[in-house]
Image (cartoon, rainbow, N blue to C red; front, top):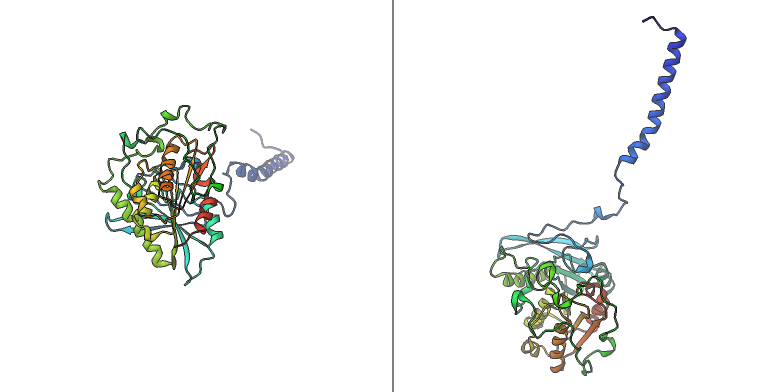
Length: 359
């Protein structure tokens, strides 16, 4: 092949340079299109990650009331060594900016439901209320997601409610002298059905998928409930040693399994609490004898009338027992409320109830 003329060589060089220039200009846009979207500053990537918990379920939608929740950046995720089993157990803690060193601060201990973790009850609205009220908000694990915080095992097949605990039977008479009737939401027969609920409430799953109180794990120690109670109390003492907690304004609340744990701990350790709040409590056997030992303990019960996991009759039965003992109680029955939605829907009512009571 002959040699190219100088003019042709010059034209080829100019063309090659122009092509390279086009590639150089276009490349940044192509590369940017291929990169994953960047999170803005302060996004979830900066939030503390909850430690893995053996046997804990994957994160689920907040309305279900189970599993870990996205961790609010205001929440501290901590661990402590539980000597009884030689394990490090996580817990969650929020401390209001109003808590000052050397000054007594009120504290709320909040207990998760079956399959939940130390983050389950740390909902943003609860944290907002704790910040506004100057509270320490403590969420223990209770050893593992199935510990029941020491509450006795429910009765019946696989822990299902007793046969006489019919779902959503007639509500108790709320006209007791100590009942906060103006704040109690009466049953609403006209409430629209909950689209997330199974068509037949009687066939609602118990145990699996969060139905209380199944979920047993063959790897759980035989003294699980004892360990759960002990680990919960140990975490409370850790926080009490670190902060100046007001013993006259320390409260306990919980959902489902945690609601059963709330009632159990309120009865067993009445000297610890100024008031208690049980949300859809999975305490199928009413401990009237136990309640008779805490006649002055203010207790709130919140229950949704569309709850297909723990029938409304369970919460009503506890309220009936409180009424018969002339206790200081408040009952809120939430029209259209299901088992999970009531965790967040009435936090403001619970905090207001606590604010009214001290020992």
